[in-house]
Every structure is written in C-alpha cells, then in structure tokens.
Image (cartoon, rainbow, N blue to C red; front, side, top):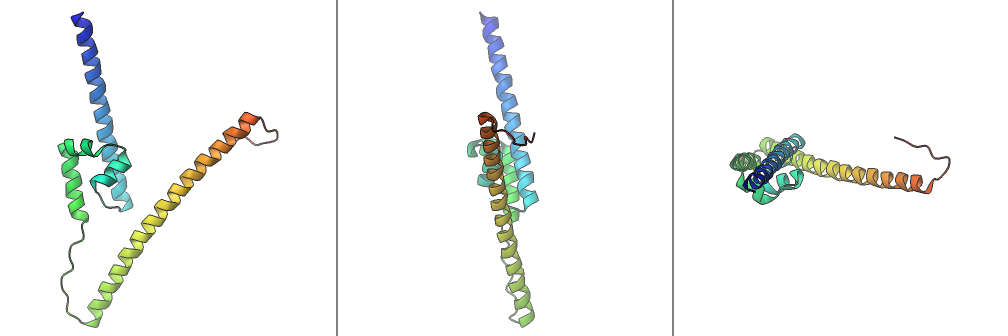
Length: 142
C-alpha cells in the first residue's frame, strides 16, 4: 500500500514539475514576443501573452526579476529640460510624434492580427459546416 502511494506521489510531483516548467517556458517566450513587437513588458502583458497567472509570475523569482528589470527599462526617462530654441523644440516635437505613431501602428497591427485570427476561425467553422451538410461542388482545402 505504501509503495503504491509513494509511486502516485512521485507521479503527481513529476507532473506538477513538468507543468511548471512548461508555464515558465511559455512566460519566457511571451517576454521575447513582447520585446520583438516593441510592447511594454509588464506583469499583466506577460500574463496575458503566456496565459499564466499573476501569482505564477510573482512566485518565480527569475521571471519576476526579469519582468521588473524590463519594465523599468521600458519606462520613459523624463526628457531633460532643453533650451527653448526652435531647433530643439522641433526635434522634441517630431520625436514625440514618431513615438505616438509607432504606438498607434503597433495597436493597429495587433487589431488586424486579432481580426485575421477571428476570420480564420469563422472560415474554418464555415468549411466544417459545409462538410457536415455535404454540399456538392465545394473545393476542399486541406
């Protein structure tokens, strides 16, 4: 009886460890994807991207430290007060405009990706419905 219980315990422990490693890997990949897309690295963004809980990210010291460092790096540094000459003002204004346009572009690209993903899902549902109904003359893409 004790051997069976020990074996079950070991199996459950191994499964929990594998699940934790998979979630850790998913969080690492999510961080890389966020960096690649130029998005802000926050606990919420990583949690949403990796489909893990906030608690999981806070409990793992390596992930927590990395997210906190990246979050601090992505925070805008206050611009030094520049002299009020026209050239510096123009450069600052254009830099701010470019930053806003980049952010808007990232948001639009993400919205398009989401819409494309939804369209692909709807297309798949419609093809399955056609298959189920046995509609003749339809080209089957597989």
